[in-house]
Image (cartoon, rainbow, N blue to C red):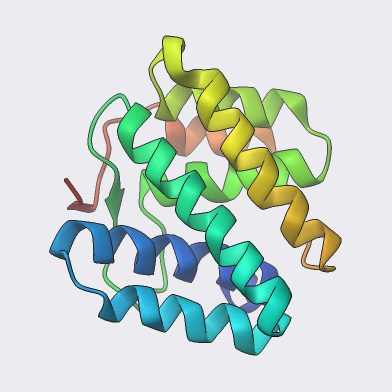
Length: 158
């Protein structure tokens, strides 16, 4: 059985999201530096910095456009909260051409008026990772519906 969260593409997205949101929530640069090290180690200097910039734009845009404050679990948690599952589902949906999954995740995360902004930022990030050969496994829409329809869980980020 595959340890889904240990796969490098999923780990980059999840850990990057957790670091970036934690840095924003705490006004600390330390989580951002942790994300920078992760991305440069995984993708090299140039691609790592580009992916990190795209991650920052995606998470920042999602945070500003979210229906409610973005949430996350503690670093190193071996589970996903609702918002983390939706972020992974969105990136996987874009990378694998699953418009249904992508649309569901955007709608669950964001206000309708801002969906285009979040979708554009997510697409830039997702396709940059895909161009670096870091493609997430598809997440079935029924799985996303089972986690994405309820109230957010996890630590409040803003």
